[in-house]
Amino acid sequence: MTEYRLWGVIVAAGTSRRMGSVRPKQYHAIAGRPVLAWSVDALLGIPAIAGVMIVRSADDTCLEAVMPRGDPRWRDCIGGGERQASVQAGLAALRDWGADATDRVLVHDAARPAVTQGDIRRLIDHVGDDPDGGLLAAPVRDTLKRADDEGRVASTPSRDGLWQAMTPQLFPLGRLESALAMASGAVVTDEAQAMERLGARPRLVAGDPGNIKYTYPDDARWLAWALDRQRAGDEA
Ligand SMILES: Nc1ccn([C@@H]2O[C@H](COP(=O)(O)OP(=O)(O)OP(=O)(O)O)[C@@H](O)[C@H]2O)c(=O)n1
Ligand SMILES: C[C@](O)(CO)[C@H](O)COP(=O)(O)O
Image 1 (cartoon, helix red, strand yellow):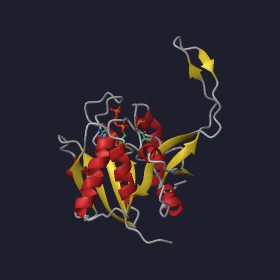
Image 2: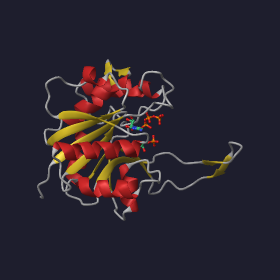
Image 3: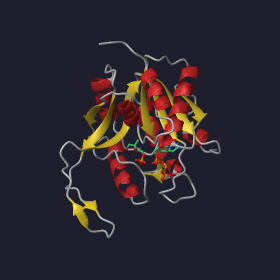
Image 4: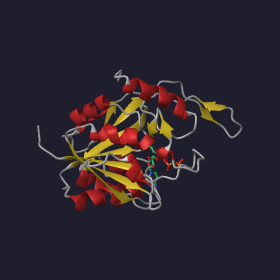
């Protein structure tokens, strides 16, 4: 097994447009704690992680109150207008902190508070050494329908081989920097997509389908249940 250092980037600089809330969703309380606090705990709970960079918006005044006091394993930086720019800002700040191109980085959405430690460890075990990296994902379970302009079924695409991408996503830091730099100008919605454009074939690691993203208000109900369950020590 190759030796490498492992870092985390948590992107938390979004504007919560789809949530429609004034307060950014990463600071909404779910199961008694801010969404960001759950996500931070998930990464800092992995002892192998050297440090976690929290990417926040320039007008964020809430971060300090949420983060663990006196913990030397986190820092923060300012993000960009698109998620991929925020990831790039996080990687640049990790470099300033001492990270190397050969180090590995786990990129995680602040908005995915219910990721389990077991899934993060499984991702590290499966792709930590892989130059193409990989991501947590869940195979599509349901029958899929493509809609036409009138909201009627146009077709039933095959679900075979289709997965839903989640985070964390784990890549060699230098390759991810290059991939995101080459993708600038194009819209890539996750790190794996940027890596694919470089010709990489990131590995899909099956994760708990409960690792949903807090995107719409009604996601909170499921997340509260999942996080209460984790707190009770009943992690999948
Ligand atoms: N410019 C951006 C956009 C998104 N994110 C982060 O990327 C994660 C996933 O993005 P998403 O759920 O789309 O969050 P928002 O951009 O806040 O939501 P919306 O797209 O509805 O505005 C979130 O943790 C969000 O804070 C970010 O750091 N910087
Ligand atoms: C990175 C991501 O969470 C993977 O599912 C996702 O792509 C973020 O952006 P989206 O616009 O909500 O798909």
